Image (cartoon, rainbow, N blue to C red; front, top):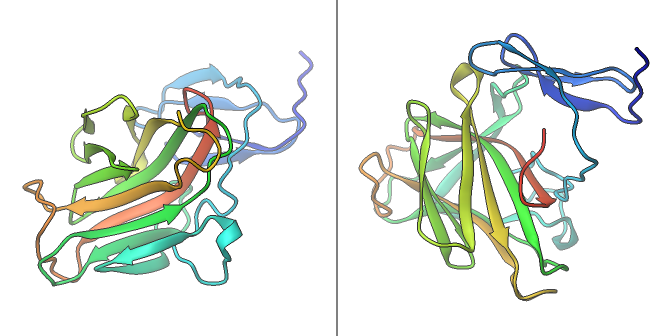
Length: 225
């Protein structure tokens, strides 16, 4: 059998971790929880529009890099925690001890009136609930058990949550841009909820949620990271 692929690509290895296949090397994907082989991974050509997809701070980046800019009542610790690749590049966001809301957010100008598929790896580190907000459209997520979400609108809505190895989850959601170029510029805002689902609470200064690999693609479903 002859196989070619012009670029490297990621897949889930038999140990449940994300691995990278070199150019012209086939990707044999696996269930991230059971390790069961899922066969040859074949996908359409896609681009992650987030240039710095694993940078959850603004240091060294300019506005044109579409960086995370809002850090409200959280402390951010970068490159200290185990990630879905098995290395230590995950970021932890930790609510402060003040009784208020705790979130991070970023800005980006959209140029096309179409659907955008988003994905993000998340891991509970003391808190297991969060809210995703895009221009006022929200849904909530629970990072426990098999993972779950609650949608409340048809503009921004979750489509899938997949458990991964070592306590990680991959969350996927769609945002439909009906306004065209520049009409919507806030996306997303990630708000940590306490374990009762409250937006306003006082953190303990230690517990938080780990983040890794934010991806945004034009389309109605997410592809591999």
